[in-house]
Amino acid sequence: MDMRLAAPADAAALADLGARSFVEKFGYLYRPEDLSAFLAGSHGEDVVAGQIADPGMRIMLAVDGTRLLGFCKMVMACGWPEHARGSKVVELKQLYTDPDATGQGIGARLMDWAMDEARDFGADEVQLSVWSENFGAHKFYARHGFEKVADIHFMVGEQRDEEFLYARLLLG
Image (spheres, rainbow, N blue to C red):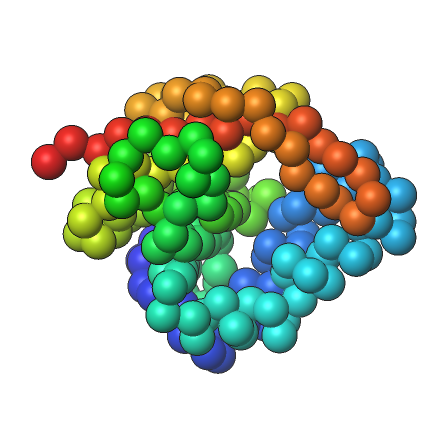
């Protein structure tokens, strides 16, 4: 497995993996119209192309040859300033792996990159949101030094999901 920054030519593959991963993990929770609207607004190819071009976002890919195994998106700004404990806070926006590649250490490698990227940016805290019932993700983030700091919500179409805000303070 290799890691590299996303390029404009990666937009279609990133959009596809993001949508497939979300649907496989969470699709059953939503009405079709809510899911469709969410996927278009969060994982549409044009949306992803804009993210790749955005200087305020960093996207790292985990690849095996030409196959996209996973990705991590970092927003170099604070997503929840009302809950910030640090003075320069960034958001880990998405960390997805291909459903067929889970358990191969891809998430851990992407998380290591995200923490290094945050430190290199001068951030002293990283925030992320996670669905309140995604227990596997809770364990993963706890293993990587994150702790729950607030109850928040996340909208998927008209449906409000109860989420947890996790954060990790970065030292030196």
